[in-house]
Image 1 (cartoon, rainbow, N blue to C red):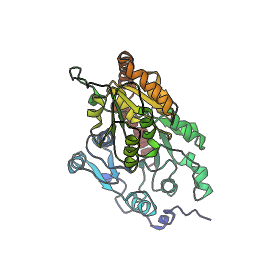
Image 2 (image 1 turned 120 degrees about the horizontal axis):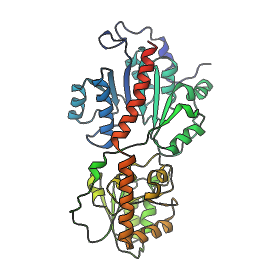
Image 3 (image 1 turned 180 degrees about the vertical axis):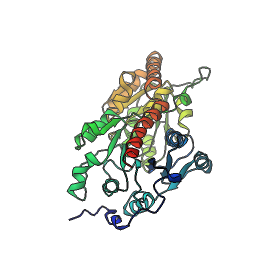
Image 4 (image 1 turned 135 degrees about the horizontal axis):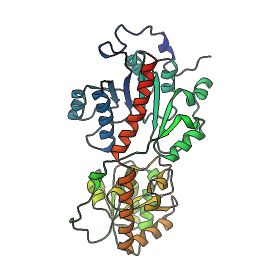
Length: 387
């Protein structure tokens, strides 16, 4: 019995239209980037998607990038001037989205599809590959949280997830998680995330706040562990300024908790992360769920702040020996670590200097772009060879 993947019936659509082999009759492969993501302008992933797409378009490859929303008009216009086609697709990625994407791909030979934020083992993506709409499928796993063995709609998809796609893991933690789910190690490549580290460099002449500034930035949801930070700040013997940036469904509960525990935290909503971290002395990432990577930790490191993270997912490997790791969900352990840093400016500076050095050497956006470009170039050449 054939699995109901939501795109299986697309195999009856018939042959590809004449002239669809490539732009201007080219027999070269084409690159399609697919992301459940909305660009804003100059955030890390905005810059990443733009740079990768423009780089391959400049080399003469046909490139299309599909977002959940195209984002600002000037962002789209810059890509289109660089001969990158920008399109939209309804997300979350369900049956209707898969059918629409299949119609755009038209089972044209040599298509390389790189997918972001669609689920590690999204069955509709695997079906597009199995049915010939995609020559090479690469899934980039950025996803935090627990990766369960998904109940795929058919044993052929369950067995095939390790051979129908290539996987890019953003950390060693994610790579091990994918491998445990049954993907052969040789199908997994680790490309760590990177940021534009220069944006986070603080001005040495900038005056410091009267009190050490402790910062959290991220989604205000239970899984991010902000409640642990507020509990740790309660009755803290050392004085500090507490700033919580971000938005989410949990904000009213967190504000209520801060009032009840008499923690003078400032909730500042969405702010520019570079500006925020340039003024931070300590950045805390107290996540409770398995973080795939931890971009916020790297941003704090690049700003030269002392970074304290929980032992969740890829966070310990990100900070290495240049940060402090505490057990997740343990406010007493977090309070102890923060008190040590708040009482010792020398220790904050030591950790911040080491963290900034580590971020600049290992987690740059340029390195991330280069490694993805190398991987995609290999896939495009392989796909071209089969045409």
